[in-house]
Length: 588
Image (cartoon, rainbow, N blue to C red; front, top):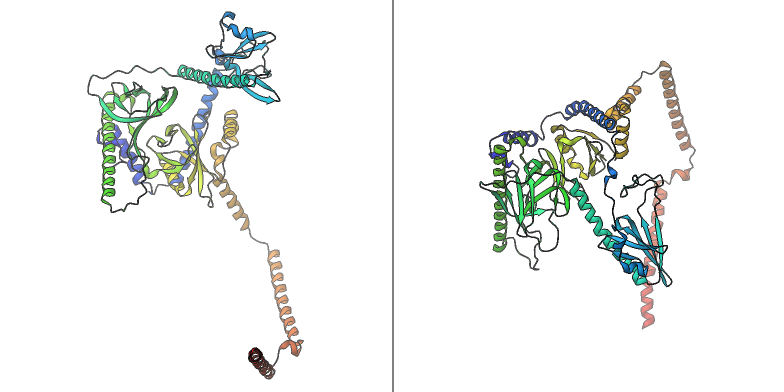
């Protein structure tokens, strides 16, 4: 029941589509569909699609060649608007000072106090030598050629200026040097976080305003949000409400976040089966801000089973009535939460089909039968295929990949002696870095190949990992060579090339032999027979020349030798019996 699509109870296109994928992936996983034929048909389609992608990229690059770069349009940091704003005590004492209010560090240079904005400081270090402390400050500067580097986009505006790369100070008071070091690092961290948040907010796509519905509000109560709002204080659950054009999640601490229906790319419902939570997940087209973080994935969940259990040290029997009652309560809680989420999802799906059909939104449910273990980030987790995406929603950071954005998949490190293999995903946007899922058990290889064939994704198999960054760069730099000399993506088809080489070797091994070779073989056979006869004769000759001693003794000689050995053994036993009696007589 958990694997069935929650929207299946509602009439509409989503039911037919879910039923189609249900029959296509679940009942026919071990069907008689020929994967080789499907992959052969996908080869030409992938090459043609790659050629179109490269042509579009080349066209965009040509049209944008004359456009001016806007990377240097960032506002320049300003420490003080006028000299009078500089604190008077700094000019009087001529010491290094940190002004947190103006986000600046003041340095005495040639008898003058010179302010530097904290964003211009690359790093600061301190070391002690004898009775003095030395402070070394390194500033952000362009490289030798004058072109801007990351974090310093203003070099183009001021190409004729001379920049200070670093400056060193000798301090008598080591405590003052330590305080300057900690103040600069703390101020730099605070300012960088502030600037990052401003840049994130400036790059956000403006969302429409949430319209509160006047009708009945569908509400999911007492659920948690991931990622959380941050900040200090106790975290509290909240309510998720569905309004006219979007969701609103709010808590008792007046924290809230709005998610527009038009910004939802994938809506996923994952009931609790072998996990600890039941969840609904939204993967967005454009990022939004939650607290001070810019995110594209937001999740609402409820814990079905407590993640920690208090151990009192006593062992409980499986037939203990209290234990059985606790298990029954856990099952009831799990079913209650799953049914509550399922009812909420069903109502939202009906509303989407009635009022927002143009958005073509539908809930997706992972297929647990097709899931496999892997490492999408840093820890091993279960990756689950869905109708439209590939997801891992339990561990953070979340892993969500849209299937329609995948160009092809390369299964790497596949071999008979290896227990695991890796999956590398190449996207249609070749400027996007490839995504790897490592350490997949080899037992899931065939199931993954069947799933990729049924969702019509081209895959290749290789025995080693490839360095994809230079490969994609060379493809984008010279598309003609990629298609004409390399044959497109078929350079990954190592099995096909090895098969052709094996066929050539087999054909060469079955060439007819000449009559001369046959005669030479016959001669060799005759020579071998002669050698065997000579060996037999030599063996017979050796036996005739053996001495009588080498041939062995006859039966009479063997009997005499055995009798002599028996007499010798009897005499030794008699001597052993006499020796203890002599010792006893001596003692007496």
